[in-house]
Length: 266
Image 1: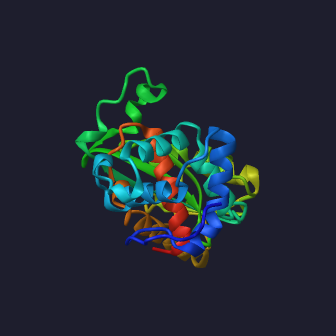
Image 2: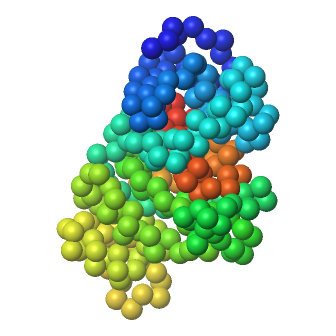
């Protein structure tokens, strides 16, 4: 590890934070990308600065190094799915006792259009969908009762929340005891899935449900945790507005920013 002497900028990682995340990131970068970075801390800080400000990559301040080097670092992490791995090492995602599900829509900037048609996700238009609010991407997330992201998935903004819920739950690393969601998750398929897995189903029925079910109202009040998570996540302007052409890069930023939501409770 390099010496922890640094000239701090407003959004930079603190010494205490770097002591936690630095060794993990360095180990994964060296072992899985096959190369060390001259100043890894400055490179990570560059990605953090871009995420918080929403600025174009070419406007990255020189203190963080060449903008192209920082972008390629971010792109390689995304291409290899390493940011999710780093996040799950540093954040206790095994604790999924109460899984709170929700989604948030992120406006797709015009710069997010035009991804290569040869990309594997081109058949779903890089998860950019057309809804009443225009072109946007929807982040579907599961959060535990400590407010930590446990899983995330992208769809177009026109995709209903309930359609990816079972996939999200199946990918969780820990056991789920209680599922909490708003009325959009009260579908027959999700209820049957929870019943089959022995998961408590804590979703209020819609007013027009013919056979309404009972749910734990005290547990349901915890759903504010996932809403607060999205409020904190969207303080990162590159999450609030999607500028990335590639869905994989945008999802990688979701995990990157979620890591700092957990570390510093922005």
